[in-house]
Amino acid sequence: MWLLVHFITCAFMTGLIWLVQLVHYPAFKSIEAQGFASFHRFHSSAIGCIVAPVMLMEMISGILLWAAAKDKLFFAVNGILLVLIWISTAFLSVPQHEALAAAKDPAVIEKLVVTNWPRTLLWTLRLVMLSVYLLPLFRQAGIR
Image (tube, rainbow, N blue to C red; front, side, top):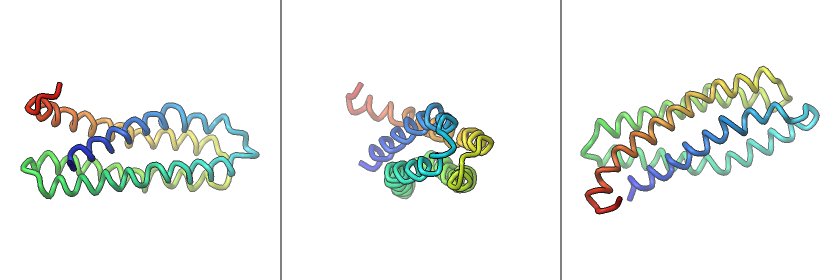
């Protein structure tokens, strides 16, 4: 069960981060400066309500999988990549959002887009890894 929860949360976050990376963050440039602070408060609050519980469940399920897994190395690597996502969030993305909370700054928006790439690529790598890991399990269970 935890493997399925972990896969679903990773897949959800991978899809969401690509949407944010390619559409949402670049669209920040189109928001008028006058209403940007209000928009950014809304964005931060709304996105936080979506990503916080999913990221937390992803971390909890990852820890539980690592603790119980026979494939300790696989789930250790998976966990390290997930920790890198959290570190990237805390030290690359959050500071950019804090800078944008007061006012629109095109240079900070561009830095936000650039510094979001590590999270985007790490989540994508994790999803590929988990998919490859799950494929033989699905075949064994007769799921194609």
